Image (tube, rainbow, N blue to C red; front, side):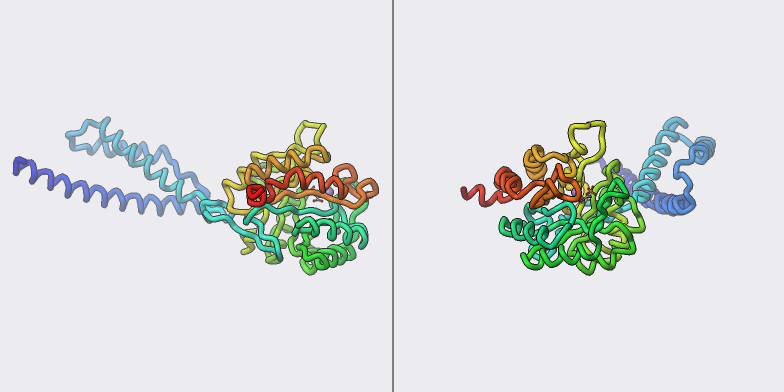
Length: 360
Ligand code: PEP
Ligand code: MN
């Protein structure tokens, strides 16, 4: 290589490094401006300021680059700086997989959400000791580890059965204990978080309360695992933000439940949004459950929907089971009786126990 060229190239290398240092210094200062703008709620993009800089740069341009080239080069610098400011602006959410790449597991007694498919089952409402004992005995014998049942019921009509309250909590706890199960039940009011926490292993926040922010904070502060149902008309983003309220209280034990959303369809109670459940698996690190009972509202769809959900990789399926649904005090048409549950289990068994199915 011609020695003169080598020497000049070394000079170019030196200037490149100087330019890089200056660009980095410029970026750091611009970021500082960006932080202040964010604090004040101001936009990062200021076209008048860019015009002003381009005006003096072209006026003072010593050549040999024509003004157009100087403008083009600096516009690239402005663009890169703006992208940097916006990147820093992007909030890191606790629910996001970007914040926590590995799956969160929620351990409740014998059940581990996020470590192989589970079933949550039990009646819609807790009605009596016999009802809870019979259901728990039946389900435990079939390997179900999580018993559900509502003691505080969110009813569309204020005149409908509202649940047994603390008496119901006692019955649910006793039935779960007797059969070695975990107990999940809904809490609707911040004032009841204490009493429900005394009896339940998992606090359920129902669809109608998904954006009850005071309740979300309170269940978050309880430190108990929280089963968070998606609201009737909530977008996936709103559902994740609701989870963020719980997580931001320092409680990372959140289980997301897709339970169908309200659409124009009348032949199902709600429309199961499987895409929402899969997005929850992909974008968050939290365990995801699909509640096929409240999504479909009809027994004939439960097994096919549960199969679809399990095949899509959700962590658990939620169903309602009652010893005698015809006389149930809520959701009569959608709860399975014991024989229907056995048929349901048979229909999904290969997906619930993939290892056993493979062994044949
Ligand atoms: C329930 O689980 O009994 C219930 C009321 O569900 P959702 O909040 O999904 O309607
Ligand atoms: Mn119900």
